[in-house]
Amino acid sequence: MNTHRHLPEWIKAETSDLSSDLHATKTMIRSHRLSTVCEEARCPNKGICFSKPTATFMILGDCCTRDCGFCSVKSGSPSFVDVEEPERVAEAAAELRLRYVVITSVTRDDLQDGGAFQFAASIGAVRRKLPDCKIEVLIPDFRGDINSLKIVLNALPDVFNHNVETVGRLYPVVRPQADYIRSLNVLKNAKKIALNIKTKSGLMLGLGETFDEIAALFKDLKDAGCDFLTVGQYLRPTKKNLPVVEYIRPEIFEDLKEIAIDMGFKFVASGPLVRSSMNAEEMYYR
Image (cartoon, rainbow, N blue to C red; front, side, top):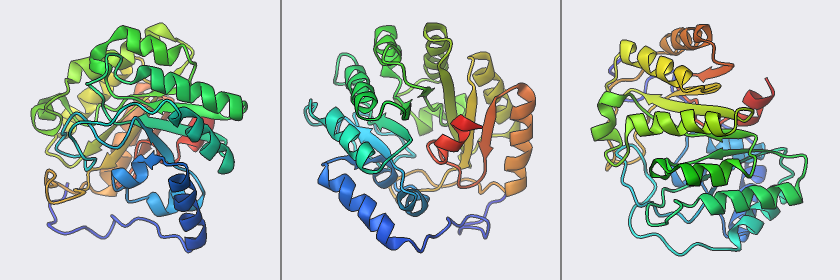
């Protein structure tokens, strides 16, 4: 483990010289009045993903009802639910000629279903526009509501993703409005409801967790029936967010990957710049 105050040499996002493609992707997404988690969460891989092109669409607005210590998405009182948004997501995905679409959202605790119907509507819209496209949803916890989970899963996404983000001990600091056991149960219940849909989760390292706690989290996820796992380095997006406690060396990520594979995960992406939706298509097809 490493405690550099500044970014160590191994944390460097790839740069792309396809700036015209990147700009075209951003322009197109804005023309459809859509948000992406790539931009709202200040992802370090945005340049590469946008120039592929690929993007993770963020539905239900850009304002979250929660205020997690690691996240740069703004919090407060969200806007109304835009019933035309699912069609715009589908149109943008078609314009980008995507074979794999990732749809996520801010947390909407103000809505009775947590936004589940909007997820289902977005899945349906993409399916009609791009029938051969694979669809991954990255959902909030819906406050653990089973009916909301069923609404999303009945729309038949190809991958159901819910991130635990960190070890249980750190939830009061990192995710004070969430609950570790509830997040595990989201994944466990999703697998019970739809056995054939692949489930996925991810976490960030460098917030003060121990190696043993990470291994225990892996076991909890495997016991919950999780198929795919992503592990990346937490990078402080703004000065208002939690500071980085440790920068984890690449070899530690490799060790953790081997541990997770030995536990039986079907695919594991583990590295400093790994993010939940990065290379999601490659993970699905491996």
